[in-house]
Every structure is written in C-alpha cells, then in structure tokens.
Image: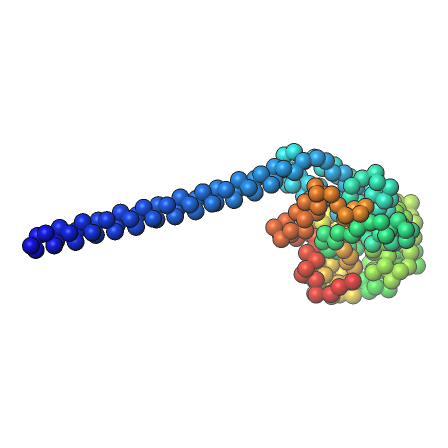
Length: 305
C-alpha cells in the first residue's frame, strides 16, 4: 500500500513539473513572438517612409541638420534628404515660395518676411543656439573679457584699435555677416543691443570660412555658433562678455544672453515624411547627440523668449 501511494505521489509530482515547464515554455515563446512582432512592426513602420526632403537656410544650424539627415537616412533607406546653407533669409524665402520643404532659420520668420508670408509658415523650434564672439589668438593674449558696451564699440566701428580695450596696438577688424544672415540678426539683437554691425570689407555667411578668417587675420573679431567651436582651435579664442563664458551651461541657466531658438519652418503643416524627420531631430535620443555638437536642448532652458 505504501509503495502504491509513493508511486502515485511521484507520478503526480512529475505531472505538475511537466505542466509547469510546458506553461513556462508557452509563455516564453509568446513573449519572444510578441517582441519579434513589435520589432517587425517598428521596422515596417520605419521602412514605410519613402520620398525626398529639401532643406536650406541657416549656416549655424547646417551641421546639425546634415548630421540628423545622415542618421535618419541610415534608418530609412528609401528616404533622400538634401541639405544646404545660404543663410536664414534665403531659407525662409525659399520655403515661403515653395521651392524647398523646410527652411532653416536662426530667427523668427516675421523678422525676415512680411506678415502675410510669415503667417503661412509653421515654426518647429528644434533646438537652442548660442552665439559666441571669437578673436584672433594674438589679441586673445591680452583680451579675455569684454563688457557689452565694448563689444558694441568693436562691432560698430566706435572702437578702432584693440589698445582701447586693453589689447595690443592692433587695428580692429570686425568680420561681418550679410544682411540676410540670421546669425547676424541674433547677435545684433542680443549682443549689440539692437545696434547694427559695421559692414567691413571682410564678409561671409559661411561659419567655417568666418572661423578661418578670424584665425588668419591679425586684429580680427567675429561671432559664430558654439557648434563650430566644439574642437579646440589654437588660432581662435572665445571671449567672455561681462565676465560670462559663452557655454551651453551658461545659456541654460540664463547667465549668457546671446542665444536664440533654431527654427525649421514648413509652409503649412509638414507632410508625413517631413514630420517624421522633424520629430527625429527633436527627439530625446538625438538631443543627446545635439548637445555634443554644441546645440542646446530647448526643454533644458531655465529662461524663455
């Protein structure tokens, strides 16, 4: 009798183990199938995007848009994105005329277009841009900090020699941007208190060219986005304004005033492809990379405009 009871207990135990194993196996398989289905759905959604996008405008935003376009195309192999510079004014004009899908700008559309044109555009604030004054290395040996009034004097031609602000006996050479430049408009508004920069003989709307021009020209001073200053350049130095370094941290906390939103405008609401690209640029995942490139994440700002 005891042997029969033991045998029955053993059989029942084995049955329960088998059922439990079967259930676990079924659940694991179900989970894997669910995960695979989700992955397949994600891939299907990504691969369903196809077509082309054209984007042009701000040279300050150009590196970010180029990099984002490259990454987006790698994930969506049926998508083609063409990106170029030309300045904020040109980008806004082209998107307003329907010549391109997205116009990139350092300033609000109404600052470059008439009211009727600006109202047709939809603003997508993709990030924050910080503009930093940069000076030639020879000047930087003596000048590391300028007051805002001194900055105004240097760029408007009121201060003609660096010795007037504690620098070397060297003529001040301000590198100017064209009137269509959003970078210029932003810098004049927040660094020069609305005063207009003097139009010198040296002018460029290409930030890379401006950086090299300041490096090669004794007495030169210019300004450009932090995104062009992520790598150390021994021939060019940023300069503080009223004791504050032009950094992302100081932009976020509101100590450094020369910043603005970077805009990507569409004429009306964006189509499916353009919206997917804009959402990608403004997403948290790409935001981490944007910061490494010198661009600020709008949600981190402690001040607003």
